[in-house]
Amino acid sequence: MSGICPNFNRIQYHLLYVLIGIVPLAWSQLQDADFKPQVTATCKADHTMLIKVTFNNSFYGTVHARDFRTPACMSVGDGSKIVTLNISLLAPQGSSEYCGLLINNRTQDKSVPIAIRIHRTLELANDKFYVITCGKPELKNQQQSPVSLQLLDGSRKVTKPVYSNPYTLRIEITKPDNSFGFRVKNCFAFNRANGSVILTDERGCPAKEEAIGSFTYDEAKGVAEAPIRSMFKFPESSEVHFQCDVALCKGACLQPSCFGDVSNSLALNNDEGILMAANTVFVLDPSESPLVQELCENPGGVHPSWLLWLCVAFGILFLIMLIINIFLCSAMTCACARTEIIEKEPSIIEDYDPYRSWHGSQYGSRANLRMTPP
Image 1 (cartoon, rainbow, N blue to C red):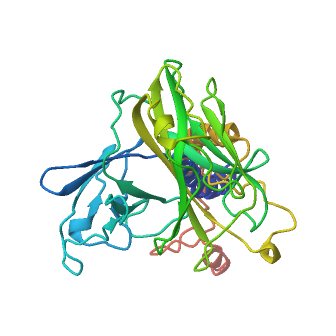
Image 2: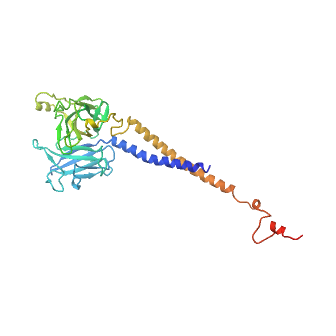
Image 3: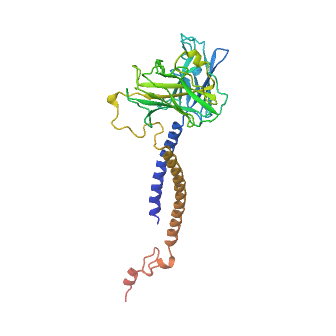
């Protein structure tokens, strides 16, 4: 019994170490899959841009102007669900407060590229990138569900699309509200060097028919999809960022016509507020395309998604059982040890031998009996 318990304890400890490594990894995958920040911006009278980022989980990463990690251009999460960043719009280039401000020469709109990183120092594939512009209306309904932007190959999420292959651009509201309609507009793609390509205009109409088609809507499910006819990339790198505005309307959104005068179509606008959706993909050359696409290519890492939750639940239950068994086996080991000590306790009567040689006396020894004369 005493030999079985230590071996069982060693097995339990090894399994415990495995669980300690697996459960946090699975939990981090769940958090990454649910990483859908909401970003709003307000330009104030003191020539600063106040950027507000709302998360659906506690946030310990960083929000900073892209390529600028100076104190004036960065805000670190403290575990709350809201992070704010105040950026100067008048700081000259080269100063400590300059955060990479971009100015549109045609409209004079001021924009700032920002990065929302899950980790404080590392750059991860699930980080989000936005180009924030002043002047977009804020939502009156702050309880509105966040939106996500994904690239699909059929029904499968893709993070590494193949150059020139067709895909689907999907915008999804996580928990759609039947009292609000929505439409997608101002979609564009950009890279780290601030190069950009407009995909849809302010009406939501395709800017280039050869690149993207019109959006089709399923408002009951909160989904809008548009076909990307041929995947593209920028010459500098394979990294491509997508961003779209999602306009929410009280009731059904008025769908402007993509033909005729743009100003007349915009006059039908009944937007209540704007949400931003963004995502990043890494475009592969056709020669780099894998022969068989991996089933776990999406950031969540597990198909179907409920399987990961089931594994976490079983892991927690097994961990509780493991701890209880360790305590029970430890108690049994102590009981076995006490029983062996009692069974092996020496007895004076049983150990007495009249022929044994005792120190200090020769009485009763075999040697003394043989040496006695007749």
